[in-house]
Amino acid sequence: MIELLVGAACYLTFLSFVPGVGPLVQASALVLLLGAATYAVLLNRVKAIEISTTEIVMYVVGVVYVVLGVFHEEDAVISSIAFLTAIILISIISRTISLDRFLDIGAGVALMCVLTSIAVDHTAALAGLSASVGRTGLARFTPLSNGPNLTGYTFGAGSILLIRRSIVSKNNLERAVMAIAAIVSGVFVLAASARASLIALFAAALFALVAEIGLGRVFSSKWVKIGAVVFAIVGLVFSEKLFSYFTKILELDSNTRGVGTGGTGRTTLWARGVAALFDDPITFAVGGGFRSSAADLIGFSTESSYITILLDSGVFFGAAVILVFWYAPVKALKLSVPQQRHSSSLVLLASFLAFLVIESFFNRYLLAIGNPMSLMSLLIVFSLSIRGILSGSSSIRKPSP
Image 1 (spheres, rainbow, N blue to C red):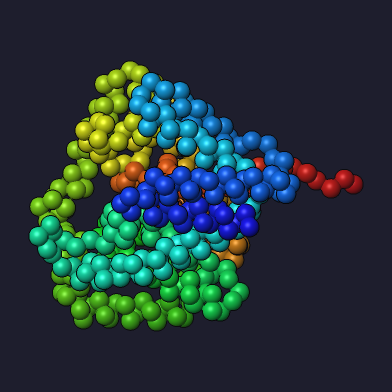
Image 2 (spheres, rainbow, N blue to C red):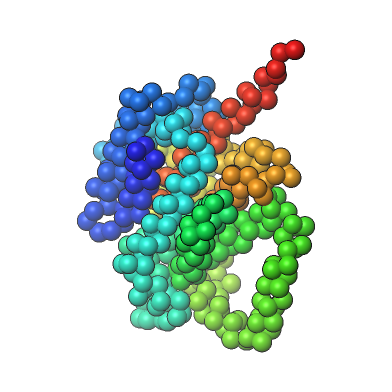
């Protein structure tokens, strides 16, 4: 029941940008998290584990957000309280559900997002994949009004959780379903022309090969060798058509999104964000508060989670939050010995976290509770911090002679 409530809360946020229901959906997701935490407490499922460094950082930042929100509009206070409440509930829930199960829940949420998108917006997905251009430019896949960048973030991160579940599952039917859903998720990222997510997926794949699976293990596989040969042949035969297609669907020659536009104008926006951070001593020290760096408030979009976090939280607290996420992939790798990572139930956890870290250079979803993968990533990072404490405790205890 607790896992069902958590999964439902994450899935509901997929509807956050549907016109007219967004605020209600986000409030409902928070209520479901409250229900999961309350249910866990009443059933005495919450493990007595000391508070982690990750939690301390997030608690402090959450409290600072609420304090700063008092000096802004009412909406700022409400969103800050919602964030702090979510952090507290996540802290409770992370002591109830294992890290492995959080990853399984994430795969289930990703699968539901795929099925929902197919049911609701499959025509738009086909239009996006056709690289068709209309009056407003390239048709980019944006299921349920999530926006192309958020679509890439959701399905890019979701594809890794789906692949991981396909690997660890013992049921052949489930493995097939998860594998197909992972492929569809990757197709959705391409249909959204979410280039930042594609870059992050490629980087996460390399990370998985080197740090989790092992290059020797992969390239010693007969089927991988055969697949590589077939891929190379197809690539050579259809190289011109493939190059033309990807140039169109990724708008590499576009005046606004092409290779000469400074990352779709991101470098200019990043510079403005850094300048805004140093222009105000208060912003530099403690930030402006949760969502204070929204485009409608500062006049431009930061286009980076890290600049957003620094503007919202200040240099000191913001750096602490960023370090929590940057260290998470390293911490995940430490949970299993190198020789056993490929067969661990936590396989691809570090790669999932690496995807988030890399993708967040280009988009603003790392520290959030309003979309499925941002909320799920907080649950996973909190659970990871708890798992680290438990692992450390078990390594200290030695059997008495």
